[in-house]
Length: 324
Image 1: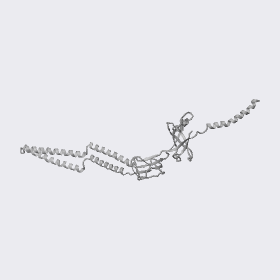
Image 2: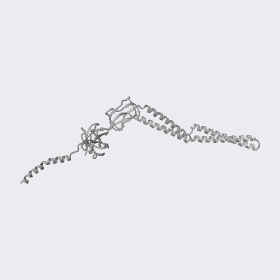
Image 3: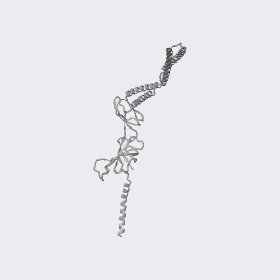
């Protein structure tokens, strides 16, 4: 009878244990608590490597710009003057090289040809005079001095003809090769300087490297801008990342490449993202003495980037990061 009486009590205890089992099961399937973070922007601080007065500011704060849209321009006069001066030097050097390669001018060649023709005529005359004097000498009608004088004149005229022929040949050849090479080397040096001057002039105008929104303009037209001083702050499209902190206990689960979901107020559907950075060094907040009970205070700084185009996240906006 005692055994029969105890059965209802056992059954009652089993019924009472069902809610506890259900609660335990729901705890085991519970979604992990989201990690806290915020949206952070990676701005582009756009500047010119050259200094000068801000001449034109093409955009305003808050404007949306496309890639290659002109943003601002500095006063270009000094760079333009330097470019024009070097261009003139390059043109002058090109003309010098062409003149060296071409040899003497046609007018000078004409003069040399006329002199060579005259020398040929003089040579023919002196040669005939030498032959006549030589024949008279055979007949004892000309003195030895006359014969020697006629022969010397003929030899001088022959040497003159050879000299003018050589000069005419050299004039057609142009300058020596080493002179041409030296002139060409000088031309390349001027060309390099011109390329650098053109690059400096181009840097006076700055365009948007990508599409985005103008976050800030730091100078106004008429103000002087130093070398490398930013003039426009641009927030490129899709340049907002999520910064959050991973507890030490989850560091092994959340690594670079892990997929997460981001939620924020007013963002609508979850934003898929991918972890692209996790710090190697551990951080902590607040500073406490660490032991086995409060080791959750150790965190690792991490960054995740949306994997789809997103326009809802705003810099500094708090977010929840959900992970599997």
